[in-house]
Image (tube, rainbow, N blue to C red; front, top):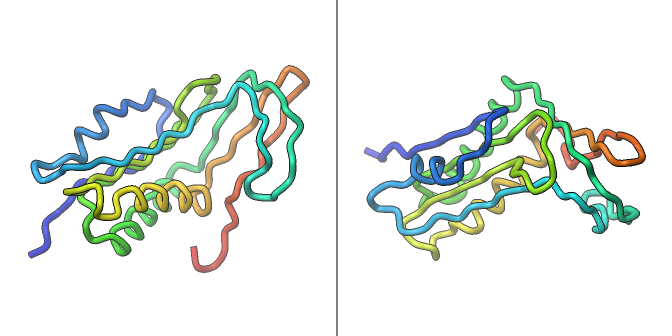
Length: 162
């Protein structure tokens, strides 16, 4: 009989408690945890990841995140299921997305995976989790800058297979 491993996925307006989440997905056999946390940037000077376009450097006052929670959480469960299908060594998974008004230096999303050892795919699983979340989980953000506000295009591209 295959053991049951802890899986957490949620949309929340509450602060992300990294320590609590890692504790909830850690077993006595756990020897490694890979954690990715996305943050609100106060200054953006990067090139656009999804579209390959250059953004003019700018300041961000805050972001407002929105989600259709039932669908978003269903898609988060799908991401967790995909991680488990690809890496049978993963023990615990936490996928949490904050919504609401978030200021620079605030964590917005967390993906954490645990495993018995660091060389069991735990890093790759966490990376896959955030990339897949950006692809299929319907979360939207509006950026507020000193010069105005704008919905920020993400990488979410729904298709019949998602």
